[in-house]
Amino acid sequence: MRFPRTLVIAATLVLLAACQGHEAPVTGAYGSQMVSGVVTMAAGMPNGSPAGMRVAVGGTGMSAVLGPDGRFSFFNVPQTAQLIFSRSDVNATLQVAASPAPLTIEVNSNSAHLGRQRTAPTSPFVEIEGVVQSASATQVVVQDRHGNNVTVVVGSNTVIVKGDQKVQATDLQKGDKVEIRATVSGTTDTAVFIEVEGGTQPSGNQVVEIEGVIQSASATQIVVQDAHGNSDTILIDANTVITKGGQTIQATDLKQGDRVHVKASVSGATTTALIIAVQAPASQFVEIEGVIQSASATQIVVKDAHGNSDTILIDANTVITKGGQTIQATDLKQGDRVHVKASVSGTTTTALVIVVQNTSSVGPMAAEGKVTAVGSNQLTVSTERGSVTVNVDSNTKIIKAGKSIALTDIKVGDHVACAGTPVDAQTLLAKLIVVESDN
Image (cartoon, rainbow, N blue to C red; front, side):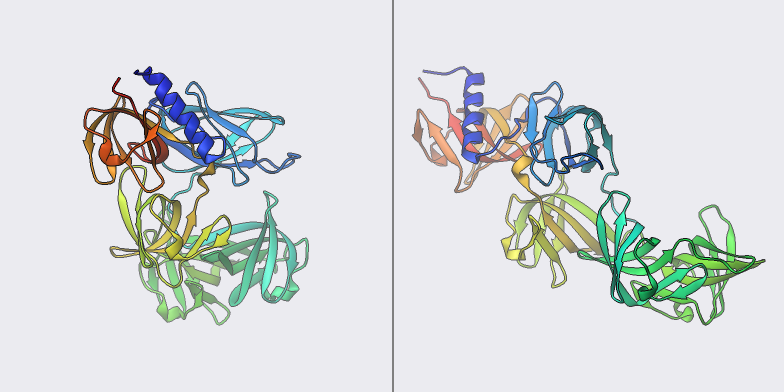
């Protein structure tokens, strides 16, 4: 007896959801795009966790119940998607453009707002602005405007300025408002420059910031051209601190073409540098998100949403985390969805941080149609949305007429209903394959 195809695929997905033991969305042929991201709760919400919130794609039937990390992913969605957020304390919608770049979405009781997408950072620096919660000689804890406490390491090269006077970390007080420029290495932020707001300026002096490219440099001054084409001559004296990559360097190390961020004191027509931070080239750091195609102790190959594969080296300095815990490179495996922050040198990409994402909120991907090819560990299935590759591993269950069969028992021309974890828009790793009976 042949069951209606819609019944077969629906039953497959129900069985898969039961096997996975959690609620999950069903992806379908509503488009060819992807939308993913992280949901955070707005300040002031009684429940500050996104756990238990349902996010759905309007008009598609796709939905997911979020975990504590707030992550979600939907495949095969329209170019423009309406996301619907619901929970006992939330009823909000947000229209977004589908994109492989993960979104950050802040949700409150009746509205949702789109934050900044993750993109390749233009330098290895982060800017932190907030209020000091505690300070010591080696670190400062700052609460930012989102209410998050950020711990920033204070090193021997950190420059702290109040007004145009240099102060020590131990001079920082709880409640001080600060702006911090810090380097990032793994999960550690190290302050290069800390400016304390509210400092008094000597008569006629002010502190300015200048960012641009060095046109000329000597031991006593630099000329910097900013983005508007204006050139500033900035003096260097014995009190000027110059850093590159978190390390102190000399004025003679500065050269034409260096991109710099300068904090300077202005007195009349004279501008004197307090700190000069030489920035890394814009192409030195990238972020890559996708699914691991292969993994070893020294490298991974990651396929992104565009189908591009990147080989990323792993070294002794690479930090790898999963669920907030540090793991080893040998714990990475094919099919893991990862977010990678990496440095680029020439044609070599080396991971700084690899975060294995929680896939509990990523629903099963379905593929239903006629088998056009059978390989040693995969099928090719012709579906309404085109050809889909169905990968098979030792955990895949294959059923025909209520009985388990092997992959080799599937023949070209068989009609199958498959469900599993999406690898990309046209590939899935099957958890369950149902082969329709011949009679």
